Image 1: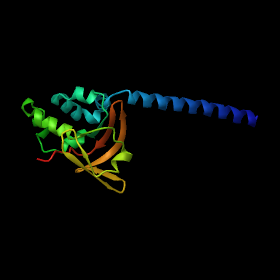
Image 2: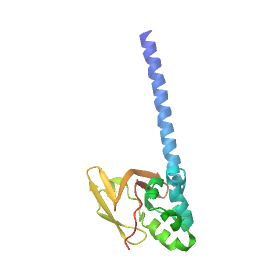
Image 3: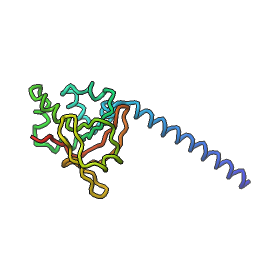
Image 4: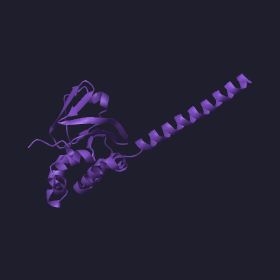
Length: 169
């Protein structure tokens, strides 16, 4: 009786493991079939970023073939900016400034976390260099801490940051 119970338990565990592996692989494929904009839009934490990308007219660029690496500030990161800053940036007359700020968060190529820690700077699409600093397990890009890495998209990768980084004047 014990042998039958052990075999049955093993069979159930094997089926459950197979299902878990299938579900994980399916989820991974679903995530990577979405482009950078779709991945960001599917996460409420990036609603301010997505609104800014739309206002700047950068949706098509970030949906393009890539690959691109985006250092994506969360809503909380945007909330750290002085009061009224986001609202001002979203105004049509400030579109060029908004484009400069957003493209400063984007680096050409797919730079995974394992690669980011090997560099001291990266040239943004805006044209200026972003400083990269590693201290222990903490990675900083300019004055922002990378809080989550390697969010896969079909045309690149997203690294989540806790502060909006700004190009030098």
